[in-house]
Structure formats: structure tokens, C-alpha cells
Length: 304
Picture 1 (cartoon, rainbow, N blue to C red):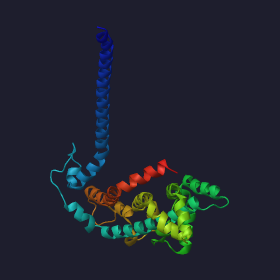
Picture 2: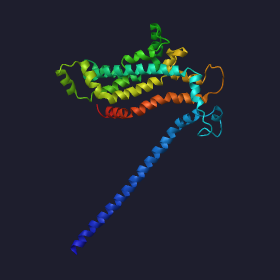
Picture 3: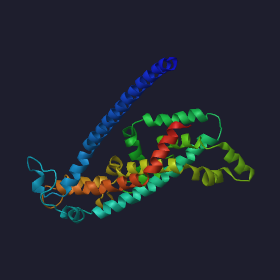
Picture 4: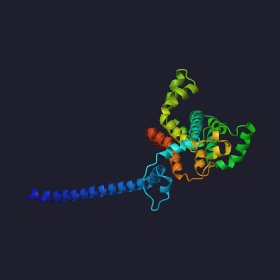
């Protein structure tokens, strides 16, 4: 009898705990479903402009102005993508953009990594103050330096060349990229440097053979940011380039909006097709390097 009376409260307590666990399980599932629903709705909302671009790029020009609009073209017109290359020197624009973006990205990665290595590994008077000055340049709008920069490049005879869009990338690489790489380099143990020095390695060799191979995630992050920046850059090419054969894609797209072509036919469908072609390389690069990109952001943000 005594044993039964002692077990009764224990069963009651287990029953209460079980009901609470059940409620917690259902509450947790409801929260999870709510979060999934919000994520799906938000994803669809942000995907609609991209879907509309794809749909419009395949429509005849008459269908674009239909009301109510059609979500998917009634008649798919693949010729819009062919017309992108026939009514404008779009292949030339792509090649110019590839050259400018590739060289500028390479320069930014190398120079930003070298500067960040100096700030993270060497001790010299005023190092922290100088680093603060470098970071403070991020608060200076680029539009403030447009006029003196243009005058300098005109004095050097670089106007209507790719040099103003490429050469500055080899001198510093940008304050944000320097900060990003410095934070990552500081997470690499200095014991590796000391061991390499004992083997007779110089600072340049340590930087090239040890620090850079261990920083692939951070370098991939800088590469993606730099690629997107130069691939989509508009103001620089607009100011420094003035001949059609030197135009990049960002300037070339304007040819489909207000262009000096022979006819005045609306070209919104062709503009959508051209915009989609321009957007594909950054998207492909992001998905290919997504693993390194996320890893670089997380490790740089949590450590250092």
C-alpha cells in the first residue's frame, strides 16, 4: 500500500512532464512551420523580379505591353537573345568587361592581401593609427574624388583606356578588403611564421607559401565581392571611356534603352535578354564559390 501511494505522485509527475513535452514538441513544430512559411513567401517575393526578367526576355515586344500581363510568354521568342548580339557589339562589350574585371580583381586580391599581411604581422610605430586612417577612407564617398581623379588620369593620358579601371586596383585594393583579410590573417597562428623563419624563409615566402594557401576562404570572398563590383561598375566606365569599342557591359546596356540605332522600335524584351546575360556570370561564380564565401564570412566575423 505504501509503495502504491509513493508511486502515484511519480506517475502524475511523469504524466505532467509528458504533456509539457508534447506541448513543447507541437509548439516547436508550429514555430518551424511558421519560419519555413515565412522563408518560402519571402523567397518567392524576392524571386519575382528575376522570374519577370526571364519571362520578359522571351516575349515578343507586343506581349510585354498586354494588360493584364502574362506571367509566361504565349509565344516564346528565342530570337531576342540572338538580337542582343546582332544589333549591338555585345560580344565586344563582354570581352572588354572580362578583361577589366579579371585584371582589376587580380590586382585587388594581391594588393589587399599584401597590405593586410603587413598590418597583421609587422609591428611598426603608428601601425594602428595608419590602419584606422585606412578604414576611415570607407566613409569618404567616391564621388568626392571624381574630379581630381579624372584630372590626374587625363594628365597621364589614360582617358579612353582601360588603365583607370585596372591600375588603381594594384595599389591597396580597398579598405574593406584589407580589413577583411587582416582579420582572417590574425587567426593564423604565428607559430607557423616562427617555424618557417627558423627554416630560413623570408617574410615574402611566408606570405606566399603559408599565409595565402591557408586563406583560400577569405580570398574567395574578396574575389567574389571584387568580381561583382567591377563587373557591374557603371560610373567609372561612363567617365573614363568615350568610344564604343571600349565600352563595358554596364555602358552597353544603355544602348538598348536610348540608343542611336537606325530604328526606334521598342527593345524592352531585348534589354531583358541582355540584362539576363549580364547577370549570369556573377550568379554562376557565387554558386560555384558559395562554400568558400560562407566559410570566409563566418570565420572572419567570429575570429580575430
